[in-house]
Length: 103
Image (cartoon, rainbow, N blue to C red; front, side):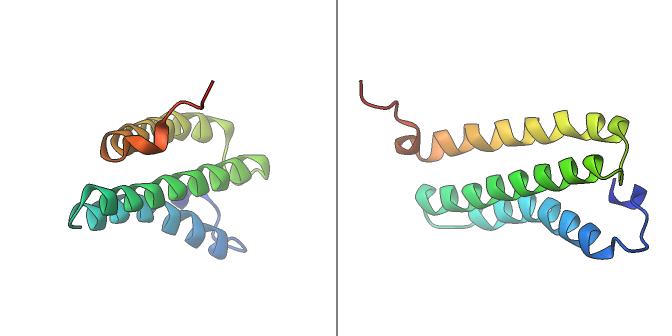
């Protein structure tokens, strides 16, 4: 998707967008090799944060006309699905982070 953004004047932004996208699977892979579920959960949180960063970059790209609404609308559901999966995995690894608030 980043290849659709014109390169001239946007190389820094494209680099940030790509790094955020690449960080998600990289943190999942690194965390999966850790010794405990709690350590893995920390890396899943980093991956989740990177997905939020990517979401912000995509919103900026559409708001500034760097990508079309059609491209944004194509990518957004995929990103939301990745985030749902990360949250589900995080809940399984560290359920204490998702306790309901006291009544």
